[in-house]
Amino acid sequence: MAASLRLRGAASGLWYRSHRPRPAAASLAAVASRSMASKTPVGFIGLGNMGNPMAKNLMKHGYPLIIYDVFPDACKEFQEAGEQVVSSPADVAEKADRIITMLPTSINAVEAYSGANGILKKVKKGSLLIDSSTIDPAVSKELAKEVEKMGAVFMDAPVSGGVGAARSGNLTFMVGGVEDEFAAAKELLGCMGSNVVYCGAVGTGQAAKICNNMLLAISMIGTAETMNLGIRLGLDPKLLAKILNMSSGRCWSSDTYNPVPGVMDGVPSANNYQGGFGTTLMAKDLGLAQDSATSTKSPILLGSLAHQIFRMMCAKGYSKKDFSAVFQFLREEENF
Image 1 (cartoon, rainbow, N blue to C red):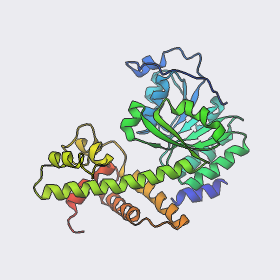
Image 2 (image 1 turned 30 degrees about the vertical axis):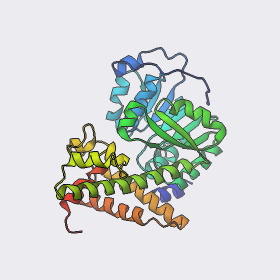
Image 3 (image 1 turned 180 degrees about the vertical axis):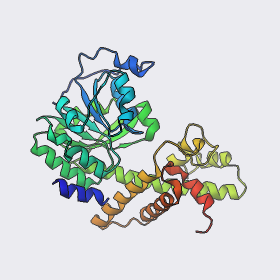
C-alpha cells in the first residue's frame, strides 16, 4: 500500500466531552498554563503557516498537545509553552488517540501516516485521525483503508479561509468520513473554525476543497486582470476596488484579499506578497483539480488555464510569494 500511495502522491480514543471556549491568553505560555484536567492530549503534526495558528487555537481551548514537525524549529515556541514535542509521527500516535495532520502535499501525508516512522506504526485502536491537508482524494481514500485495518478512524477535513482565518479561529472545515464520527471530529475542529461542514464519505472533503480552490484561483486571476486594466485606463485602484465591491463583480478576491498593493491593509499585497497562501501550493491544488477533472471527464477550461498561469509564476520566481502576486506577474508580463 505504501508504494502505491507514494506513486499517487508523486503524481499529483474518541471523546465526546463538550467544552466551552476559553478566552485567549496574553501569551502562548499563559494559554498552556491553564488547567487542562478535563482535556485529553491531542496530537498535532505539521506546524507551517496554517498548522501553527491552528494548534495554538486548540491550546486556547484547553487541549494539551503532542507536537511533531519535520522542522524542529517550528516546535520551539510550543515546547517553551509546555507542550510535549516528540521525534516522529509514530511517537505522536503512541501518546495521543486524537491526531490532526496539516501537511503540504500528498507525499507528505503518505509519509506521515505510512512511512517508516509514521502514525500507523503505533496507532491505537479507536483513535481518531483527522487530516486537514489538501491532497488527492484518492490518497485520502487509500489512507482511510489502511487506518481502518488498524482499528482506527480516518477523516479528511481540509480547510478554507487562509492564514488570517487560521489565526482568528474562523476557518471552514470540509469533512469527509463516517458520519457517526463527525461529532467527535467537530469537537476539535470547532476550536479552530467557525464552520465545520460534513460533506459525505472519505474524500468528499478533499473534493469540496479542490473545487473551492479552483474557483478561488480563477477569481483571483480575474480580479488581477480587472484591476490592472482599470489602472491602465486611468482609474484609481482604491476607487475601482470600491466600485467593484458595490457591484456585480464583487468577490472574495476583490473585497477581502485584494491583490493590488495599497488597496487594503493586512493582506499579502500590502507586504510584498509575503505570507498567506503560496503560489506553489495553489499550483499544486490546481494540479489536483486537473487530475480529478481528467478522471471524471469534466471540462475545466478556465481551471486548466489557471493551472498553467500559476505554474508559469512558479517558473518565473513567484513560487514563494502569495498567490495574489498574480497581479504583479500580469503587470510585468505584457507579451501574452
